[in-house]
Amino acid sequence: MRIVRFSPGPDTGLGSDPLFGLLEDDDSIHVITGDPIYSGIQKTAAIVSLDQVRLLAPVIPRSKVVCIGKNYADHAAEMGGVVPDEPIIFLKPNTSVIGPRDVIIWPQMSERIDHETELAIVIGRICKDVPKERVNDVIFGYTIANDVTARDLQSKDGQWTRAKGFDTFCPLGPWIDTDFIPGTQKITATVNGEIKQSAQLSDMIFKVPEIINFVTQVMTLLPGDVILTGTPAGIGPMVAGGSATMAIEGLGELTNKVSKK
Image (tube, rainbow, N blue to C red; front, side, top):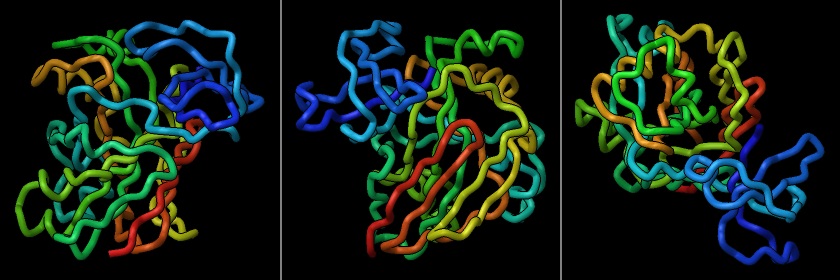
């Protein structure tokens, strides 16, 4: 299933509050009640067309976004590091999350903000110390992320909180796919029409079972938490006033404009 979160258009008769729905192959959206992570999939009688709505971030983490650093060997090399022995984890605040077509706001503090295309895991239940063989029990689905980074501030600070924590620095979308299975799918980043990153999900050093097992040994994950699984080589600056598209084969595309400085 592809689950979307959306703002209804004025001609839908569904009001103005965000809703969830199931996106069908014909681009119709079957509206569902509540948040499916908490209340399950309960269809209503309402059906709208994709072109009648504005897609929002498919999940708003109530707690946290957990990120994995240097999880592709080529990216670790381009950052001047070696392949880590265990996953490197850091956090982005949930206030950094935006949705498809939303604008990434260039902070006045920074002179360079970079794109980082990533597979994102959406957690569906409270979990702690999850064995590798049981990670599918806690995964609600997958989506696409752009781990936007103020690269100059990352270098200046010597750690990553400020550089990755600005409002709008975690675009997610366009939907959550509950049936997606990570494998050899292609993952790319395109900036102003030029492909900058291209790899396969199978190039990840630590795969999904290892990531969830490791993270849940450190912290409890809550329903709606999101894990970003790392980015391949090719990171680089986005263009002020331009746009960036993160894509994963089978999961669609996530496009965001970038504000001017």
